[in-house]
Length: 125
Image (tube, rainbow, N blue to C red; front, side):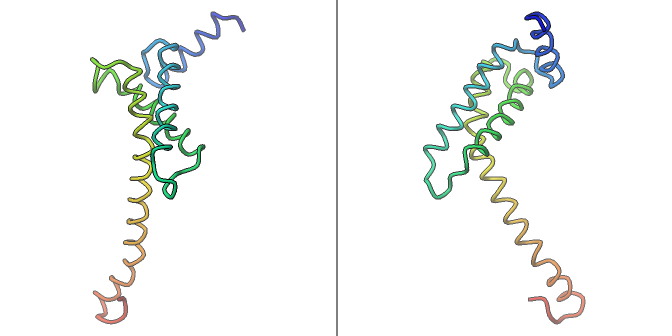
């Protein structure tokens, strides 16, 4: 593959994701997203830290999502800034999603007992 073919392949891949930015800007923003996510992870207390792989995966995912919605939500901001912000906040977004999932699981565990208690008036709680 030549350099031109590689650039076309990367450009078509980014266009498939809905990202209209030049790929050097996208790659630079991705590095900033990953760096901000690791920096935010370092600032969290050790008891609530996630593994590096979860942090890097979530930063890449939210960095890509930030690049996709960049032109729609905040077009006056730089792509790098949006991706870095999304990568940095990904640590807290994953923590919030985990807390929400845990609370939902706990509530759903009580549901069968509550249904039995409401129907039959016994058991449940």
